[in-house]
Image (tube, rainbow, N blue to C red; front, top):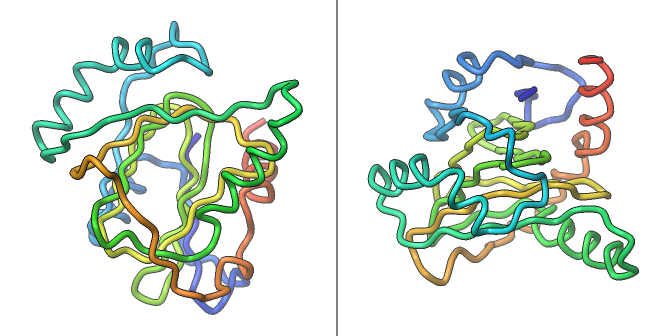
Length: 197
């Protein structure tokens, strides 16, 4: 299930908020301009579904969001463990790409998780909000929001991405090492999955 954990930016020693209630998560993120909602999960869509399958399954939701937000480009991105000898290299490179704090000044970052999970860390107003997203979650991070994203050391997810610009967004890195001071995806995932069992 989805999880929101909030700490002071000074470090994770004090937990300001920890909730897995979708309504509480949406209410906590809304003042930050962050859109959070859950879409119905299509059980017949495989975890590693191709883009045609994903678009066919989630067409009505995609059309609604495009109409509301004016997105012009939508794509599907997926990465899943495999026996391919290139997987570890691809996984490491993909994870490293946005693991450090950055902003996107040219567009919002909006993702819907078709399968799997990942964590967006939002560094806003003196706090760090770790949003553990999984299948069925849509998260919209406004342009200019300082954040980072962790997909873990063995990424396993398929996500729909929405863009206002055809070229997508580019990360502007802050140079801060704040990401290294907070629990990473693997740590949060292990504790979250373990506590839900």
